[in-house]
Every structure is written in C-alpha cells, then in structure tokens.
Image 1: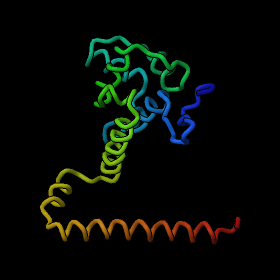
Image 2 (image 1 turned 45 degrees about the vertical axis):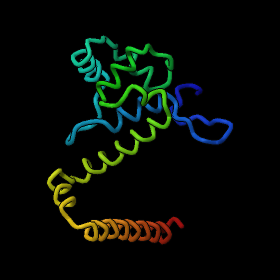
Image 3 (image 1 turned 90 degrees about the horizontal axis):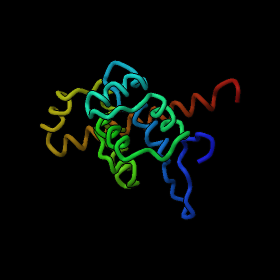
Image 4 (image 1 turned 60 degrees about the vertical axis):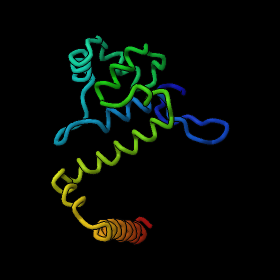
Length: 159
C-alpha cells in the first residue's frame, strides 16, 4: 500500500486483497446506528475504552484508517473488533472479511431503506413461493431502475 491508499491491494493471482486501512475505513463508513452518520474518531476512542478498557488514541485510529500505520497491536485490533461487533479475524482472514462484508452490506441496506424487523418477520411468515415472488419483484424493480438510469444517462445533453 502506498501513501495511505485504502484501495484493495493486488496479489499475483489477481484476487483483490483488502488492505488493513480499507477494512478499518469500511467499518467506520458502514457500521453506525440508524439516523446518524459514521462515528467520529473521538467517539470511537471513548466507546472503545468504555467497552474494552483499551486506550486507543484518535490519532492511532486515523493512522489505521488512512493507511499511515498498518502494524497495530493485537489488543488494538481486538478493541476495534469489539467496538464494531466483528470477529478479530475480520482483520486477518480475507474469507472472514468477505463474509462479514456481505452481512454488513445487507444490514446497511436494511438500515438505509427503512426496512424494520417487523417487515422481516412478515416476510419470514410468507410461504416459500411468496418469498420467491417478493425476491423476483425486487430484482425486476432493480433492473427497471438500472435501465431507466442508463437511458437517462444516454439521453443527457452532454452525450
């Protein structure tokens, strides 16, 4: 990683390997309560100390998040994992990272679209056939919106 770049790194086999900075930044950007933006570094340091007893400076978090520091102590990574509710292996194991990332993406969509637990409970009460219909409706709507956005982009005056 060069100069704080938080983009995934490349291995020889062309599979993207997310950097530690990417993983830390991802948690900050995505893992926050409904109705507010991401945690500030100061909020995170206070909450980490309260949850774990580990004192981590906001400067340390900034350096980890931006790639200025990529070799933190095990205790710091464990404290970050506790704060964000992910397993510590999230930072070391790319398979765990990808599995957690998928879960976070789903939770983010649910949070940001206003889907509540009552909606999910009602969905789970539906028959398998009805669940499939709802899924197909969502996919069809997404395709229609994507086509509409593409048509809008193709017909914009700048083209």
